[in-house]
Amino acid sequence: MTQDELKALVGQAALQYVTPGEIVGVGTGSTVNKFIDALDTMKDRIAGTVSSSEASTLRLRALGIPVLETSEVEEIGVYIDGADEIDARGYMVKGGGAALTREKIVAAQSLRFVCIADESKLVTTLGAFPLPVEVIPMAVARLQRQFAGMGGQARVRLKDGVPLVTDNGQHILDVTGLQIGDPLAFESEVNQWPGVVTVGVFAHQKAQVCLLGTPGGVKTLTF
Ligand code: 5RP
Image 1 (cartoon, protein in one colour):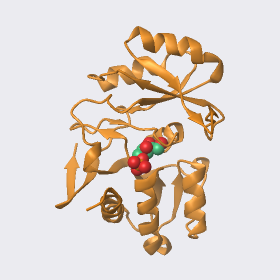
Image 2: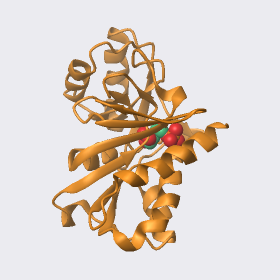
Image 3: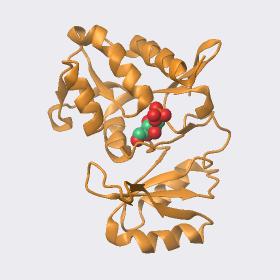
Image 4: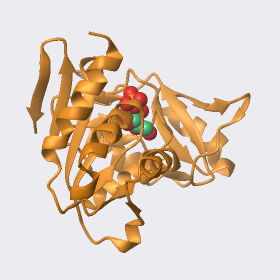
């Protein structure tokens, strides 16, 4: 089975976590795109969606799936999103699609986080995937030095040769060379550095369920 087929498998499987009548939180990325395509089949039975990025909003609206503002919604039943890495406790690294800040906001508003991923995303220790951190541009040099102090190399993510600008008008640092043994402590520490908007460790907003796509089918991990 190709990676694309594994993503489609978990995107489809995530529908079982969508309760008719509820609002659905929708993440961002190629795996979530498969979920959005699957959600099309039950769009008349949900109360709407809250989206974590302009890209997902466009895809949802193109299919005629209603998208609400977070401010219009008090509570979201379930949040479905992918991950760049997930460990055996449900802690994740996210932000490969640069949508980490809105993803964390929607996740925080949701009762349950269901992560959908192909099996390549399951890791023992977070940190092999370059850690995305959304930052205020004027803080970049200072934050690069702070990450260097903990053994990391932080590079500004580029798009078409210039710094990528997120949906929130900020930049992304991708940090290599880290081994994140205590994701809760790491997230808390980096989040309070001046200039950090959001760190891509999702430990305080971890997944409760992971649907992992494997050649043998969907494996359900609960945390
Ligand atoms: C976007 C994300 C994505 O969930 C993560 O990058 C996984 O993406 P994909 O499903 O394309 O592998 O965090 O900011």
